[in-house]
Image 1 (cartoon, each protein chain N blue to C red):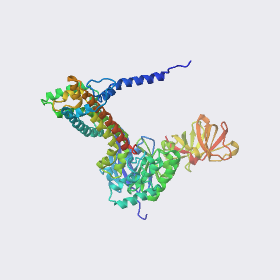
Image 2: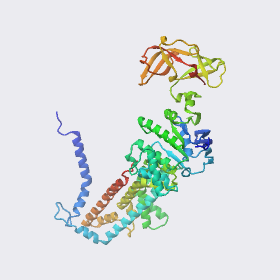
Image 3: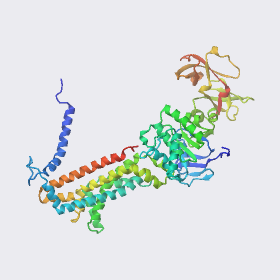
Image 4: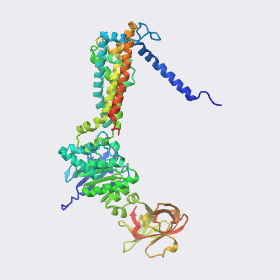
Length: 366
Length: 266
């Protein structure tokens, strides 16, 4: 790993895809660094899968170029691109044994019989399913089938591993395990991986870089922490995690970078701006549900430079370690607050204060 | 009050009657084929294979039999050769006029055979060609193509595109993908379609009556003409053979197809 990594191992340049009048992918540039795990995240119809399929060669871009390792591959047919592809429904060949499934890609590469056997066995060991070579796909569980699909994709030592919602067909518990397994495997092999999902937890937990998409546009890209904590717009903040949005108007700007803004009910709130704002500009404050702290009046000493909201608990749901509250504040707006349970959870109709650091009140452009 | 006969019992009874009504004549033919007497009566006055022996010695019938076999086999081959690529095109590709073309190929199934028979005959007259074996073959292919098309299409829809995409991504060329993935998964349907085509061609009467020449009579047409001249118990024997063939071939096909499909249902 001494060699410098190529920051644009996979490169989309001015790529665009239209299906008739529908623009699935708006013209965009995107670089994917060598050895990284990049997630394309977004709701269905955001263009993430189309982008992946264009890279795979299953769709032709309407405009723009795709490069892998600096080589333009637009005109390279799919079977010459050397990519490993994983599908949502595993797509194991149902009429072939596990061994033949995994060995399939090696048949079209210069590999001797003995070498093939070794490689297949090694790949099966890598996905922790040794000795299933003689079975048929239908004899394996969903999780096992997806691991075989993984083995089949990595055995050909692809330049890029493409995964299209590989976990969504699995049930909740299994998904968690597979998530860790894929993550570990990717780190172990160091293969550049592009992972498509609509599940923010998958995206945040696995990726080196998250690309959030909507309506064919890239909304934001960056490390998971960056995208989560510094969401640049309403959509990203809303799509990742649980966020509260409050309408606001900029009152004064302060030297320390914190702004005073007026909320709908006329009260003043301190917020940290994302971007530049003018005085009087209409904006929006976003606050994550986990970044607020609930307490009774007696619990809080009102500190200077903190935001406090007074409200009444309307609804709550207990989730074991934490509790999800909906607190009605002035104006009848509901704030979603998620807090760890310290002693006993607050009850419905309790009158509470919510404290939140201005740092976590992020002022967004409307 | 407890009802003596419930609605369900009536329905069961009715169903049995309907089946009896439909199958009794067929059973009668098979039984009478073993009757040694010239004129069939019940109960049988003995049991013999003599009509079958006589049948095998009747050269015109044996010739018709041969014609039917050759025609059926060729029909199956041609209908499959046209139907499978057509099904692939309809399911896997987008092109203009697709729905129209598909409807046109399926149409013969909805048109009465008499109409089809006359139409093809008129067409051949218009082309100023004589009736021939080729005409008969073309007619039968037209007649059986919809079945092949429908069966293969239904199966193709069931074969997920991802299998092919996975194979392509692993380095198999489109042709290799077809040979390694699509064709093996499609094989049971192709096989079933072929047998359907064969069976339909083998026992078609109506349209064949219009198309067959004196030299290439098929078995059903032969039976039909035999019935017009005499009522020979040979017909019963021939009927029995036909019934056994047309029932057992699809059954055998179903069995083979299931063996084929074992372990590879997606």
